[in-house]
Image 1 (tube, one colour):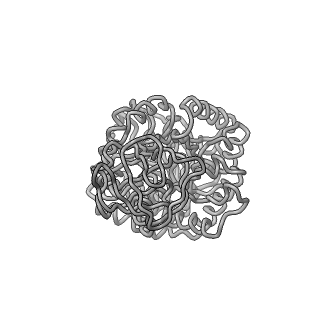
Image 2 (cartoon, helix red, strand yellow; image 1 turned 30 degrees about the vertical axis):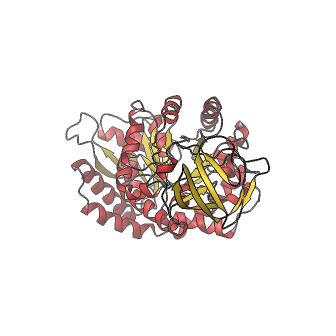
Image 3 (cartoon, one colour; image 1 turned 90 degrees about the vertical axis):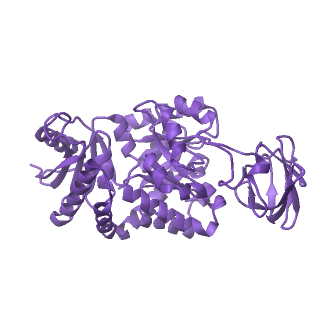
Length: 478
């Protein structure tokens, strides 16, 4: 049995063969991530085709998430073998892209001198090396090392997001999103406002990939509600978030992001270093196990693996481990208390009429599922909206999202607890409910004798059509 919290696994050299992809799907992967920051687009397109072929052979509904590179600032190359800085060392930063030394670091950012100010921080690499800006003068940024270490190659340079003049999506992002039109999701880096999401949306053809906004800056936290409104899903990108914000704030920011997403029915992914030790180790640390469980308790829709499955020594073992930890955490997650709170929040929210109807019906369906003890809730949906709204309640009953759209079915693979099922939907409400029950029976998701709930909207063109979930029926499966 798989956890109801979904698993996102990154494909890389350790996991891009058909045999390993099959192992990963059987181990519990729901979404495969393609990291477009590494490798040519042709490689990622080939991997997406392989995922589709393997999933079809297994009869599995699996989504593909293409993670766009976003804006990057890099230092000029350091000497072979790298250099070591210790706290108190003085370093000069300048605009350029040639070689760097221990004393002077070239930074490939034309607006470097405007993007920093005395007292601000600059971070080199993955966050281990931190510089404090002393002054900006003579075309140089004078810094003191506050946290040292060894630096090699051409590491990334992180400047404060509030002052940075970098923009997203980049020209490269806009080209790649066209190439990855068949992906189910694209992830946008360095998001700072809803406007960033709108810019990417304008480049996506109707019916194209849904957008995952990566929350990794302090600016994004300040515009969180706007971003949730514009995006189809969010990612708690804890790596860069822990660089741009105080590290001790990250657990609290994670909880805030997840809570707001679940309240709004927007899927949310928790990412970064979840099972980092298992890149080389056959077992996780106790801290990693606790981290995964806490993300489940927070209510995250999905948990993401990066290098663990891309280059790790046993990708399938990592997925099985995460699946097992999440499944155990779900036993003690306070989902009923959350559902009661969500109902109160939705009743107080100023939403449009269609949303209010959907909220009322999904709240009633959840309450009925508890009172009656139904085994499953079937959501008939074209866009996925009904299933997402129902998933927000984290119901104990099996949650099935039935849709005639293969793209909608794959997109639902990211959302907590939803079993996506492609099925025909009729123009008649009675026939739609009958078809939904028959499809779920054939897929062995429900059994004869079960009591279930079916949620649906009035079919397009039918009387009372409201673009909302306005049909709730309790059915005993004959």
